[in-house]
Length: 225
Image (cartoon, one colour):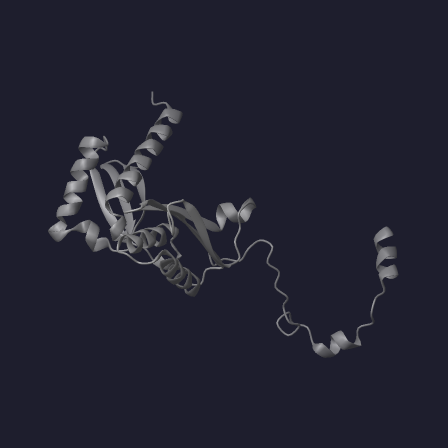
């Protein structure tokens, strides 16, 4: 009999190992994430990337090599790989973090690269974004700089369900630079309040003007009764 807990733990570990391998070898392709599904015919692996052609390879050679690696080194039974494009790459924290890493490795100044990425994220409709770059930025002593725009959630429900985080690393001559990207998705926050005009609510302005004002004492008396 299959142990349910053991099955899901092993599945999670396998997914994490695949994710780490793809992030290490295909970050220049704009790798965004991976999902695994168990099917009667084997294991379906869905890879999300900004440039799917880079992962597919010429005549599907890269996909075939990945299938062999997953089967031999990760113990995946009959892997069936599908590569999907990301709908809006500028709102994907992982893609933006990898873009910054590639830009730094190509010699772009960290401030210029960070501000360009920040503008692209906000132009895509994000409610807020934060980029943190750490390392030997301007001297031999390591430090970090933050770049922010819009509204940022660091704790609570918003940070868990509205915010997306990602970390990437860039290897330069002074050492390794750490890049952390935080993006607040363009969804309505829980604490957002929108006042609807009377016309949209189906109320007439004349009726509202004729309504008699109610004092605070009357409201208090009604609540007691």
